Length: 95
Image (cartoon, rainbow, N blue to C red; front, side, top):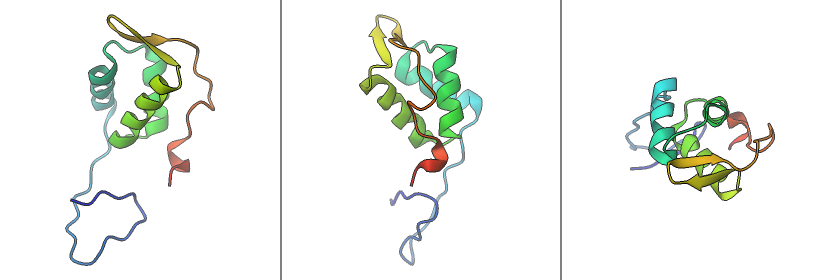
């Protein structure tokens, strides 16, 4: 299996299987699986930035935790500080 970003041309003879974008419900399921209960502001931020990309959803979740924006609680995570619009890059700026 070869994972690659759009715009990359895989080697000849490679079979491609494109991942579909996640819908709102699927992103919510992924957030809940990683974070437990998820505050609406966090869900909205991740949904807007990930643009349906499941790998980027997970990358954003990891970043929110590692940067201290989210803090663990017995039930999941809570905001340690309010996320700013520039805390996470836009999906279109990924390469």
